[in-house]
Image (cartoon, rainbow, N blue to C red; front, side, top):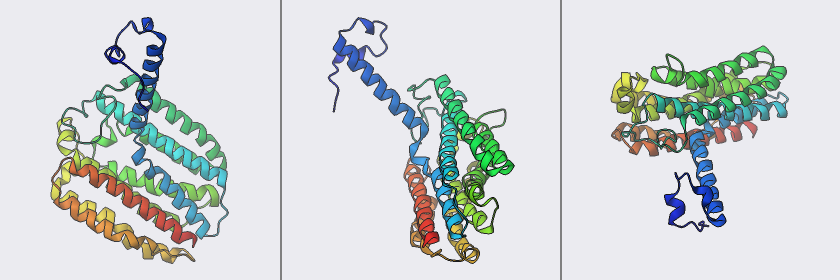
Length: 326
């Protein structure tokens, strides 16, 4: 429902005399400002990408069930919340740091960033990132008590990588290794860590499933970096997409989205039961994405390929979970 806000409310957005408005208009402005501020924070968190931190925990839990290990549900829920929070912190810090470095300029073709668009101040977004990392650390205290020093090291490394992705003198995002970091933390670390919290050990099945989800998450980032190659080059980034060039980047992307299907037989041999081949149902989507990536010119068209790659990761993960618990 639209708010009854007249022209003076809109024109007075940056006015210093809002306190002198009639009560109805002050209330309407405050509501409008709060609504827009909340939307800006939601945009900054990049909710469409948060599935990349949720699905590994789900798959790690399904692997736990498939290998007949008892599931520690409080620890699993803690891992899920911590995984989402560390990604939100990374996204917020990335938004603010890229704006400071001039990486989200007028030539940006990707989704809007709140700091470069002026919707939120850089300092506030950085504080939001710090709060998300702090909340992750608090949850990590409990998870470390359950899982011991391996979980403690994984948690510290996750928070450190989240900050270092665009922070520090040599940000990970400015190097060709960002996709590898994503494979490590959004795949191997998240699935393996979830499994460890319940089983207190690490089996080949968890590593193999973690690798599958990790390379799909790496494909999501590769789409982003390929789309933004010209803009990234302007601010001094040397991403894998820039160094490899369009032809080889398309080949790498095809390898990333197709290799999880090739790994399914390996996972099937490590799990005693289940319909592990179920994710093959979405292999046509992976083939179509590899084709479209190779044929689409760099630009806004890759925003749709980015969304479809996230969808592929979610569908693959969901079918894998179903197959593991059948």
